[in-house]
Length: 376
Image: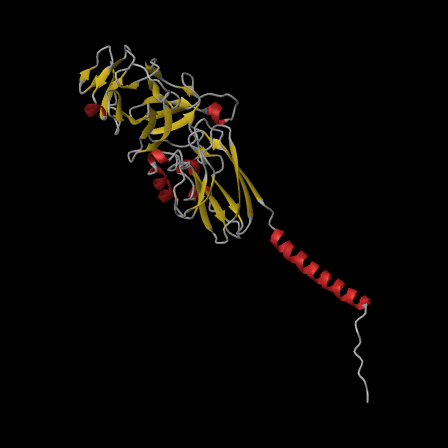
């Protein structure tokens, strides 16, 4: 009877098999790791330029690539940054606007699946970093600021594709019009890099206002400066707008140069007060602005807890401006104050205002207009 003896593997052979296994898996692991790491993380730095603009209008990433996006608010206004799903910008911006009084507490982030990543609301000089994996699905993913009035002009595009292709900037529908137009610089244009049709505006630094100034040029060659710090119109001027040459060159502490003649300068610390008091207990708070269908800015701010909306337009004969106020939740008197100027006469309902303030009850104060007419 034959006995079959099974050979037990020696320790040496077992070690050789295990070593081969680790070598093979190590090589496979290295190859797999190499495939994963062949696209290094994409680092993106975005800040804020004057005029409600992101410093970077667009950038490209590969599907599945790691992205490190640093957003720094280099503006005096508050801003946030949301990365959202393709073709959802207008929807997200509208939802953020509908948050109303809840907007501040929610950082103007609407509850919708279209929001993929977002920062909080950043004050001046604050930075927040978003780290995420780029979507696997190719497409154009917008990023946008959703504070009131910002999202219609302050946005950009994250292109996700393997090819790295992006359209020519002048033909790119995913970036704001003012970004596309900036490539058309004409030698004969002194103050602006592209043709402008009023009304138009700039966020800038200018003498006579805080760093949170907004200069607006209206039809009729009349302009005004609105200051977001005190939440009021600072001054009005005729026959020219601003020269932003030094600002565009990036000079430190540069200011825009006003062109034309000032016809009205507001010297009162408060233009609107609520109730019988002639002063406000708390400083006003600027909430932002939106662009109306006609292209004018509607400013939104809070005085003593009351939300106020103000739009400034040119008069029909182009010989001055009209300030229109909406105060939907007004439940007390509103008092309008103005500074007397030789070149300006203020009118309410076609009647010149006296030297004192204009006092309106809660019925008439919820919506009213005051004309600033330039005397010839």
